[in-house]
Length: 326
Ligand code: PMV
Image (cartoon, rainbow, N blue to C red; front, top):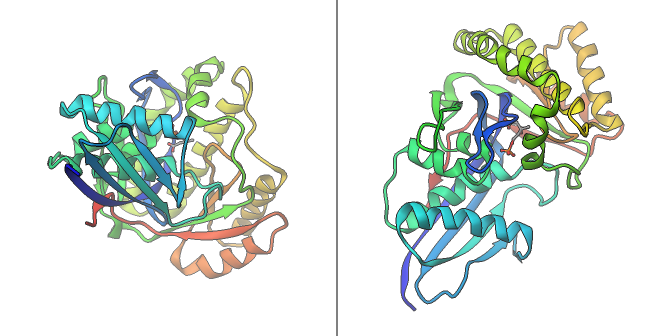
């Protein structure tokens, strides 16, 4: 055996408050506009990467299962980027474990590619800046760029590979927002986000969305800095509707919601009328992220679990970005 190096990294998923949807450059995953997110506990990927010059190909094991086909190809294509950017030609053995059940309907690509990026670079004995690591993670999955820096994060769209990376705005301790990840559909979604990004600009509403992002992002960042919960929550929920309006009006249109999604949206709106200030945000799927403050977690969670069609509720709290653990 001629081992080149090995490293193990844990990386969190993140929930976007200002969403990423649509690319200026699809191959490099350079987005049309900035986005903003919070890293969350509750959905973590731990990945070991081992480079060895006796390996004759890459191998990928996820949650104990040797992976082949499209998913393995995507990992290998990412490792090709690593090899190109680091001038190496060794193959890798990738072993990955998710803290949440596979196929639970929680996006795992952000935590997965952030962990893979940091583990690959570390296994090769290199020390890269967070900006470089974030740009690298982006090549696997755009939102993975935001799981590298700590806490509350902004991804600067940039204009080329190096300038399109995420930075930390505030550490995780800044604000104890709780993300109640409400699972209403645990199967795989029909339209993956890579395909969704390619459809974005077929929506007649898309240019208006892109134009409106800078102002809305500015207001959101101010509410985040001031910890103004109501302003922040209302902006986040309305931003999620803006995203889904684009999805629904693309050609072909994408409707990610299920009846239980709508049930959660309506219930949360009703609870707000009763004084419980929770807000919803939805990514490219049917599951709803219900955001609330720590004091409301127990009652909001209990009410969510009682709704028809809710399979489970996972608690996510703000956390740091990807970290080397071994
Ligand atoms: O990173 P991707 O290509 O899986 O895209 C993520 C898209 C959304 O989850 C819908 C929004 C976001 O910013 O995370």
